[in-house]
Each structure stands twice: as C-alpha cells, then as structure tokens.
Image (cartoon, rainbow, N blue to C red; front, side):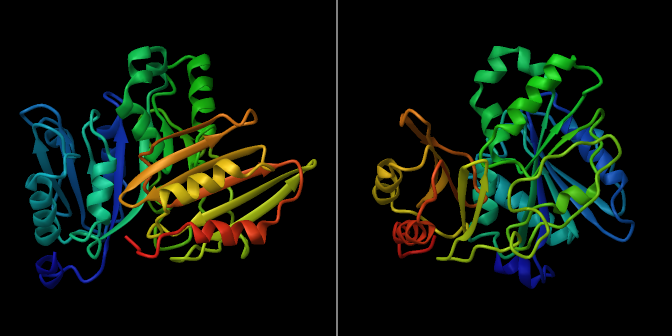
Length: 346
C-alpha cells in the first residue's frame, strides 16, 4: 500500500459501495451517478460479476474521465485471495480517481469488502463514505429472497437504502419495504424512493467515518428518514473518539432514550459487555451493534427480557440504545460501558 501512496495517491479516495440483490438495479444506478458526476473529476468503478465472463463492464458508461475495472467469476467479497487486492491497487495507482465506486455481485457479502478497505492495506488510501443498498420491493413477495443471508446482510450493512423500481411494484409491496427499512438498527441515514436508480450525487457523501454528515436537499419526489444524531445542531453533531463515546438522550411522554456511539476502533470484551447488558434491569429495551475484536455482533433485548445475540454485518461503528420508563443514571452507565472496552484498539 505504501507503493500506491508514493505513486500519486496523496490523500484518501472517497469510496462508495453500492450493493443490492440480483436485479435490484445497481448498474443502472451507477450509470446515473456517472452521468451526473462533477465534470472536473475522474471517477473509477470496480465491479464484480458472479459469472465467468463479464457483462456489467460493457453496460457501464466509460470515458476519458471514467475508468471501469471488472473482476469476473466468483465473488469480489472473498478478500482472502489476492485478486481484489491486486485489482484495487492497480485501479487506484493507474486511474488516480477523485472517487471510487465499488459494485459487488448481487450474491456477495459486502462486509468482506469493508473489512479490506478499512484494514491496514488500504486504510491510508481509501475513505469509506456512504454505503448504499438498492432494493426492488417486488422481491419481498419471494420467501427465498427474504431468507437469503446475503440479502439481509446487504440491507443491514448499508447507510442508505434506495427503494428502486417503485413504479413497477404495488402499494402493498412499497409499504412493506418502507416498514422493513424504518425498523432497522442502527437506523439508516436515509431511505429513498426512486424508479430507475436515480440517486443524487450528494448522497454519496451523506456518511463518512471521518467527518460529520452534511445537510443536503433531496430530489423532488424522494423521501428520507434521518437517524437520531444526524441533524445539524452543535449538540447532535458531536463525534465519538477512540475510548470516548458520543452520547444522546431524549424524553417523550414519560419514556427516556439513551444512545451511545463508539469510534470504529473501539472493541468490547465479549463477556464484559454481554454481562452488563444482560443484567441491566431498568431498561425496557436494549439494542446494540458491537465490535468484538475483528468480529461484529448485534444484541436485542425486548420487554420480555428475551435477548438475541447474533453475528452482524454492520461495520460502521458500535452503538448502544436503551429505552426506559424512568430516568437512568446515564453518567454511571457510560462509565460502565467504557470499562467494557478492551485496552487494545484494533
């Protein structure tokens, strides 16, 4: 990676991952973005297909200021092999793009790509920004898709969900897609409706691991739901730092919410954090996504105190949310949560 930096990459390249299950409209959306990119910028696209011969590259619009690179056959998300590392390094070195778009195959787990981009090989050359998942609401009628782990992982990992092809689906399908999108944890930065992959380029920078989320205007006819903490007041744009979480609290009709956001580098000791969350008796509801070493888990405990812990595809940061019908000692809770962090940052 040092060789890439020395050969011309002097700052991290803004990078977006666009995912979506088979037929969701990823290639069309990328073409829309390419058509509306700033005229003075060079963009690059790294695309993967599951088949052995590449077709998507021929469907994408290239030019002097657009470089397309394709990895056919297998899965780009299988980052243990050298193919993606080599292709990505070559693309960054030769194209020197002002922005990079990555389109994994519709059958690929995007979490492997995120781990690679944020790992030691590429962390200095890549700045991961909004991760976007396109959803065709019509697939929600297919139980095979709903049960497919890749489909669920793509949705879980994304910062922005784009409900695409809304002109082709029924109102019931669209409503089901909206309910699915709005009940995610962590909440999505935005949920958009579109018909042919139209996505304003401003949304590419809605989220970033290194800067606050900007305020932007939506396309006419689009809808969005912003996550708590994304609004533009001084208090709510606070940022987590390694070893120091950002914190928000609110009260509505006698119910209190407490939210902590930890830096992506922070890792929790598994037994310590699960023991703390399991034994908190006052909160009525606890939800969390947590980095445990090099793995990530989600935690969900409802009103009946039944809790679910499972592997998570989320890679942005660790978040904990508690809801209670009485005020909690937030300062003490914060100290106890921070005490569950491991000393070694990953």
